[in-house]
Amino acid sequence: MLAGVSVKTVSNVVNDYPHIRPATRRKVEEAIARLGYRPNLVARTLARGQSGVVALAVPELNAPYFAELAHHMVREAVARGWTVLVDETGQIHDSSLLERERSAASGIRDHLIDGVILNPLALNDVDIARYASVPLVLLGERLGSEQADHVAIDNRAAAAEATRHLVERGRVRIAAIGPQPLPYGHSARLRFQGYRDALDEVGRPYERALVVDSLDWRRQSGADCALQLLQLRNPPDAIFCFNDLLALGTIQALQEAGLRIPDDIAVVGFDDIEESRYSTPPLTTISPDKAAIAREAVARLAARLDSPDDWESKEVTIGYTLEVRASSGG
Image 1 (cartoon, rainbow, N blue to C red):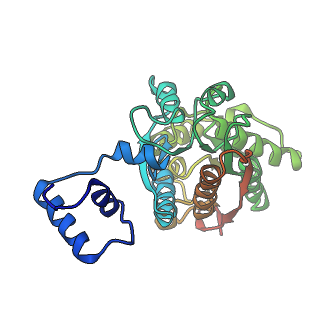
Image 2: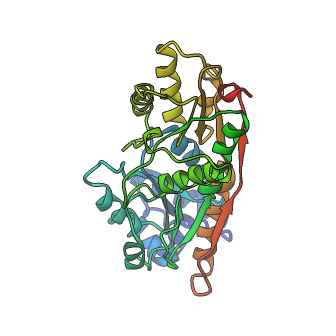
């Protein structure tokens, strides 16, 4: 052997065993460099039982909310010495959505993954049960499975608070942009229920014409939906959008139509992405505690990896605030 030591000694150096003489360590490292040796990660994984790699799977990486959330996730994971593999599963109109979410829930085939943090749109509790052997933390809405932890805010209560805020600002005809068709759109369904809850509290009648569905939650969809609302004989004086991108598109369309915000029409969003603070006018929005979501999701995954035999699924509800800004008269 080039270093003149045993295989065991080389293994101890590669695995950073502390009780190695400096001269021996130096000889082995020099031999490794000369030979261009790379450790067998598969063998190391099998020996330790864990790879130190976890997966984060979200619908869209170019959506600011998920980009910001991924930033917090990576920071929390790195603090534990983990590496994060980030995967994009797609939106509800993508034909491969269900297949990609199943792949993520199963541990992302052909990768050495210790566990998965997943924000599903299409999976159901049957799918989750099928992959029960994979340590899994779900973000977004609970699917009814006891095979995974769940970390989320109370979307229904948050949407009710956003709508209630518009009522308290004196708005009468409050529209909503963002409901999505079943069986997808779990978060959309809860936000819609919260919108209805707030209207019911004050005895406001529900008008289906004031609710515009949207398959995706992007700026262009928000602009298109807002223009559809402006075509009504009696248009709204406020709009609650189910995420900030819809709200930002809505603001652009309303301003291009010559309306003043919030004088003529108020707008409220959901997610508190960074862009919402710098829009014109700044956007009132529901602000989930993204750092707390990441912290709890990583902590729940770590708990399962540390104690796989004693683990029990847990529901973790994260707080939120309503950030009142100029778009609603704040």
